[in-house]
Length: 233
Ligand SMILES: Nc1ncnc2c1ncn2[C@@H]1O[C@H](COP(=O)(O)OP(=O)(O)OP(=O)(O)O)[C@@H](O)[C@H]1O
Ligand SMILES: [Mg+2]
Image (cartoon, rainbow, N blue to C red):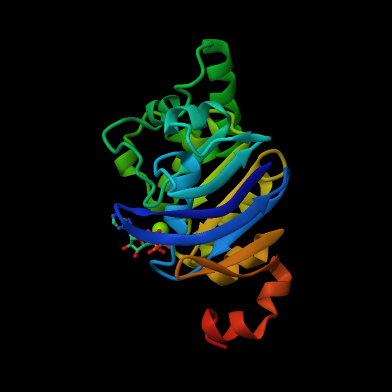
């Protein structure tokens, strides 16, 4: 579904990702794990079309998207849940969700989508008219995910969903992602290596802008390198 080949990207003339290649197949939940500053958000921004690569290829559903502007990437079926949630605090839960559906013109489809989100996240339904800034951190993260899903994406990319959440909330949010991944392919990037590997079908480890390891999540959890470098074991 998604193929990234020899991607080089950075900010101005400061390179961040080096010859990075990865692949996400339809129906998979793929995690990219790495420490602060490894380049995880940069990777997601490049796929989203927010950052233009220096070189390399990004292919989605058989089509090159590395020169496609961000708004068109959304239309092609890739949603991006950014780091730090970034919900619109002064807007209601419902209005935040509706913003996620800006690529859809048909009001019937939008309403159907809204109801699907409320089924998936009953808490959001209860708080439909509440300002987003009054939600708890976990609820805001659910809202950010639901907003991403409003566009009915084929691929949902989630940046650091666990950041700032209590462990039990992290588990709940990740469980939701696992459920979602039965219908929507998911690419998530995470610093929370343990949890991200546990739920991933496959995962990549990124260090200083390079992929250093890849494999099934469970396999990586067993590797000495991961245990030493990321799990403090
Ligand atoms: N807007 C920017 N301008 C210049 N450099 C940036 C910018 N955003 C990120 N960088 C640099 O790119 C590198 C990778 O950053 P990135 O945000 O991709 O890391 P990350 O893996 O997402 O880290 P974290 O886990 O802390 O979110 C860092 O060295 C960072 O300083
Ligand atoms: Mg980041």
